Length: 401
Image 1 (cartoon, one colour):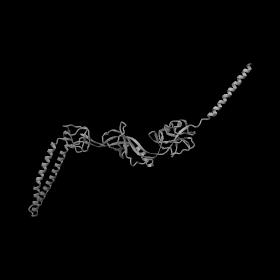
Image 2 (image 1 turned 60 degrees about the vertical axis):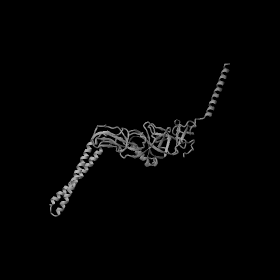
Image 3 (image 1 turned 135 degrees about the horizontal axis):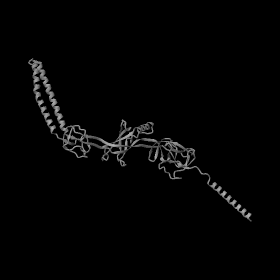
Image 4 (image 1 turned 180 degrees about the vertical axis):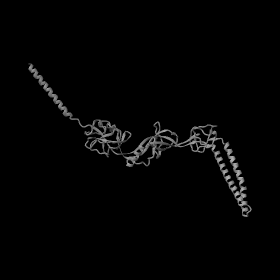
């Protein structure tokens, strides 16, 4: 009896084991081995872009004039309002004119005296010339009279110059604006003693419309830009090549564009940079001298730019950029890159890629170099996070334009 029971148990266990083996074999046949990982690629296509560079600078007045006296004297009046706009020729200060008026009157009197003596001396010379012909006077007497005439004429010229000098000095007592613009604070008040060409300016006038923006650019960037143009990678935009966009300190774009006027020819040895000077319209005088400004300067047109999403670029242990591409055999290959700059959320590739290369933009974590992959359209397996317009390649036979 016990032997029968044992026999039945052995038979039942064998049947169950066989069923389990058959079930596992069926599952293996249904699932099969795992396939190659799926990736989304982007075919690299050259684009035409306008390259720019963002530089920081400071504003400076288009014209600035420091007002200084040209004669000594006491300030009688200040004839302007601090911080107001003044016109060229407008009187700003009045220096006490009394001493200069007296000097002018004295010079005029001396001139009249010299001119009064001149006719008598000229007549004497004429008479001596006639008498000299008749031997009535000596040659020495005639020479003395002629010398006196020339001295008298020189005295007249000297007195005229003295009168003109006194008139100029009297005019300098009215200190006028040499340029039109905004005048700042006054450094003197009525009753102050001023001296000619003193080091401290009485006030400063600045013309604010237009206004300069001085931008330092490193010589390294300048040489790199010149090399790109020499290689033909960049071409000058003749229409907008000199246009410069301005961004205020708070990040607000300035509504008017500036114009690049010139690039300085001298390198600052302390900073290793040259100055770019931009002229910007400032009709409402929102820009003030010394203000910090960010600028977007046009470099040129790159008609063969290759851009790839930033998530397609990784770094090796040394920090060198690289990307993964899918070759014609649908296998992953590593491509070292030389990156130029970031444009939005894409990298501008200087070298390392050729038109038509299929760059992996999704599924990078699932692949390894040399392994086969399966290309799927963007969004088929996961959402496309590239965020950039481009051509995705659904299979290995697709070609870039």
